[in-house]
Image 1 (cartoon, rainbow, N blue to C red):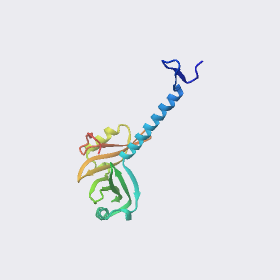
Image 2 (image 1 turned 90 degrees about the vertical axis):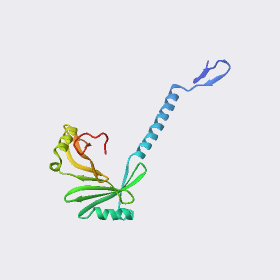
Image 3 (image 1 turned 135 degrees about the horizontal axis):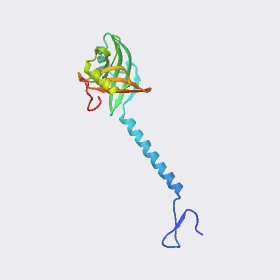
Image 4 (image 1 turned 90 degrees about the horizontal axis):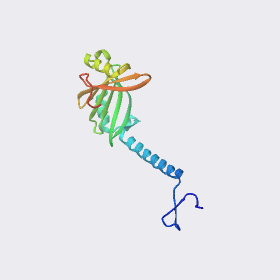
Length: 180
C-alpha cells in the first residue's frame, strides 16, 4: 500500500512526494493573489495621487503664481498632485461665480487650466458634440481645458442611470483622438 500524497518513480524502491490537487490549487491561488497585488501597486503609482495642502505649504514660486492667477477670485483650496513621478500644485477657486482650477509645476509655470463654462456660452458645434457623446445622459458642469495657453478640449460631467462620468470633445466639438 502506498502512502497518500506519494507516487511511485521508475525505481519502485524510491518514493517522491507529490502535491495533492488542493496543494496545487493553494499554490496557484497564492501566485495569482501576489500578481494581482503587484499590479494594483503599479497602477496606483501610475495614477495621479492628490492630497489637500495649506497655502503655507506651497513653494515660493507657486505662491507667487497663485497670487497672480487668483486676483479677484475666491480661493477654495489647494492640493499637491504626483503624476508619473512629477509633482504639481493645484489651486481651486471661484471667479465671477464659476469654478476655475489652475495646475502649476513647482516653478509656478501654469500647466493646465480647467474653467467652468456656461452651456449657453459654448459654441453650437461643442454643444452638439457633447450631446452626441452624452447619449441619453444628463449633462452637468462643462469645463474648458487649456494647456500651454491653448484651448485643447471641453469636458462635461454626465450622469447616466445614476453613474457619473466625464466626457471630452475637442474645441471644434469633434471627438478627441485621446483624452486631455
